[in-house]
Length: 133
Image 1: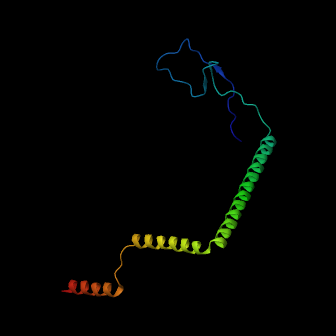
Image 2: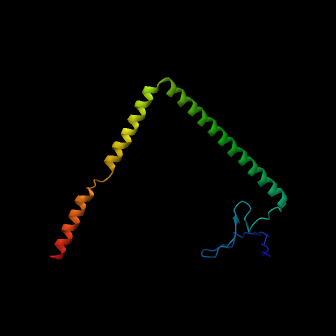
Image 3: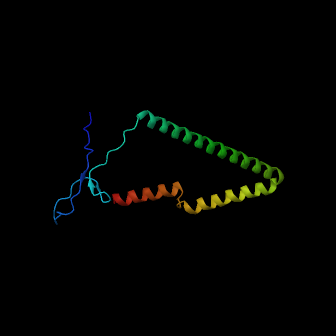
């Protein structure tokens, strides 16, 4: 069983405060000049659980609505793309080829230069022979 917290508050005496005096380890309320943790109203756990369940249900509904709207917008984009491809097939093929070319060019520039494997084998053989000599 957890320890009970002291819920009584004491009044802060400011008339006899001295420099270097230890400060009590508690909450100090400057408005009421009291030290301690104010008494908290005890709540029913069933009320808290029902509130949390309501919040979870609301979040589930929001996630479902967001998923439905994303699905609807994706469906609209697919239909629009299909309509463009049907109306402009040649331009679409040219656009896809251009995009593929850009990706191929970018991957060619970013990849390191590789030697042919036969040339690499000859160099490895030459290096091994030099090490033996």
